[in-house]
Image (cartoon, rainbow over all chains, first blue to last red; front, side):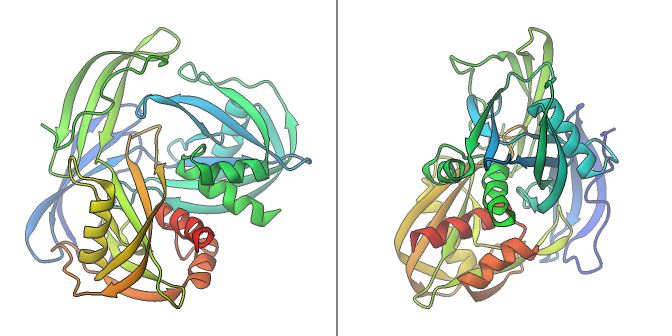
Length: 188
Length: 188
């Protein structure tokens, strides 16, 4: 059984798809894949395989000097070191803001007194229901970070204007970082 | 066997993860899930389940009046109608620009004489290697669209400034649309 409730949980009233049945075809601690038997919008039978890692949070933590905390971590799936913002998975049933505070402290070594939700975004909604909740964190305090054992993380405080340039020049290519940085500057 | 070559294809020289073996645990026409046996950065054994739907393209098609083509399609995974840009999967071995031209014509009913790559972005690199190649298309010609049988699509030409407002107000929450619209305006 997956850790999170199955998604989609049922057919919306205005759905042109009809779900006939669902079968979990793979599950581990971080990911569940469900294969749905469906009737497609054109009336033909088919399947829809939905990988669901749950939702996640992303945090643009910006200090008094308008510097943003960037992290660099090795992505196993991409097989390279990538620059992004602090963030991580929302636990089953967890409030996104609670997850954001935890991830910023654990991964970033920062706590914040001021939080704003910049928006929530669908990362690849043709494939997965995964949604990312993007936050702006301000009024910051440094604390000791304590990342997970799989994370080797370097942290850097970068002027927000430089980070925004990096979303244009290919240095920052992580979707939630690109969106959060561009939204954050409009909230300062 | 999945349609696309397995990813990750091997360990990068600077990877702190070591891959011991790989096993395909699920595959359909649109998605392959591979479970890798790994040695994690802290030296402990573990698994990494990687769903890979292949890469995709997104197109910001902008006409002479600075209007952008928005589409609305029902997302099965999210169970709602969502507003986005034309786009779709890159076929195995296909050049991203070729895929973009095909998707813009099939889904959007538009061909273009001028193309620019705005960037390529990792949608959820902690989970999947899926990369989205985002294009700007200009000098447009209308042609008859011919969407896939699973697609019920409505099309609307919207002033780019309004579309950008929609990336802020929650109307446009599709990650590749948010990124492409914000990058496109800087290329006009």
